[in-house]
Image (cartoon, rainbow, N blue to C red; front, top):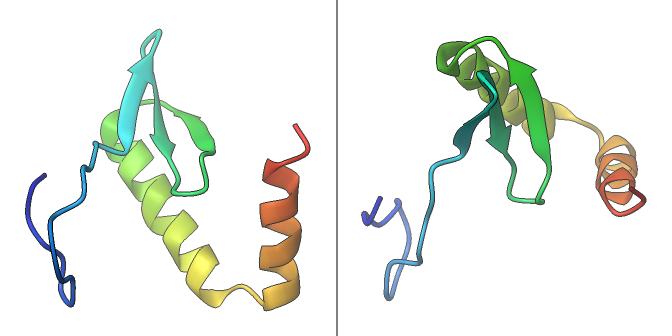
Length: 74
C-alpha cells in the first residue's frame, strides 16, 4: 500500500487496509474513523464499502452533514 494515487504529489502517506475481522465478522474502516459492519466475509465487506462510497458520492450535503455529526456523538 505504498503507491501514489492519481493526482497525489509528494511523499506517499502511510495507508492501512480498510478491512479487518473481529471474531469471524468482517468490517471496514472509513476515513472518518467509523467501523462499518459486521459482514459475513471479506467480499461482503468489500461490497459494503462500495455501497458506502456510492452513498458518500451521491448524498445531499445535509445528509452528509448529519452523517458526519453522528460519528462524533457516540
